Image 1 (cartoon, one colour):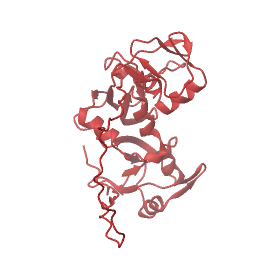
Image 2 (cartoon, helix red, strand yellow; image 1 turned 30 degrees about the vertical axis):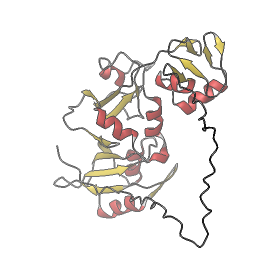
Image 3 (cartoon, one colour; image 1 turned 180 degrees about the vertical axis):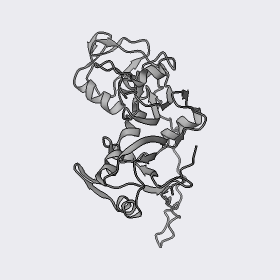
Amino acid sequence: MQKIRLMAKSDNHRGKRPSKNFKGGERKKPFNKNFSSRPKQNAPQKKSNPDEIRLNRYIANAGICSRREADTYIAAGNVTVNGKPVTEMGYKVKRSDDVRFDGKRLNLEKKEYVLLNKPKNFITTTSDEKGRRTVMELISSASNNRLLPVGRLDRNTTGLLLFTNDGDLTKKLTHPKHNIRKIYHVHLDNNLSLGDLHKIEAGLELEDGPITVDSVSYIQGAPKREVGVEIHSGRNRIVRRIFEHLGYNVTKLDRVIFAGLTKKDLPRGHWRHLTEQEVINLKNLK
């Protein structure tokens, strides 16, 4: 497999220096040695119950949605605890409580993260009324829990697709403000001219608004109809539409990197569980 060499952008973040002790001309107050004869008693600290968990976190851990979305559902009265509606923010429940969302009982699930190298002719949805094959078929043996795809890939787009029951992480990886890095290997019907490559670099005006890519370049050692594109936008068919706007047809589109994850040792149509370090890396993305 040919390597795509793109110049990755990095942000340099400078932390603030710890403030130095103030050395102004203010006089210090004399040390007071008059102690009270009665020893000072610390206020008793309320011990947290390890068996209790905030309701919004319980819902998120059950794979329903993010904690922020759970707060909205709680306020709307969609959640009951032991048969009673709960709308209080910060409400805590025990793991043994009967928590229901829209009448369906929730169970806490172990967080799972599955990476698929998606083949062509599978649509990214949990079910299809037209009877088309879905990506859920490909990971059916990966878990007994209900895993959902993070974002989507078009039916004829191949490459990396992540599945999880972690609602908070899904929200993070799909929200535009986090600028999640994605790299695609693009095959075109004709060689991409240098002028059009520069147009893509400068940014294009599409029917649904302007679009810029993070990086675009020819694939080293490959014909000029093969291009590498780094982009963070998640707009529908965005990579295909960029090239269609310039008169090219995309004959093959493969996502080779998603949020730092790669296709290494993952054949087409196969899946694997993320390592503990990979999960940590995803959660630490800014």
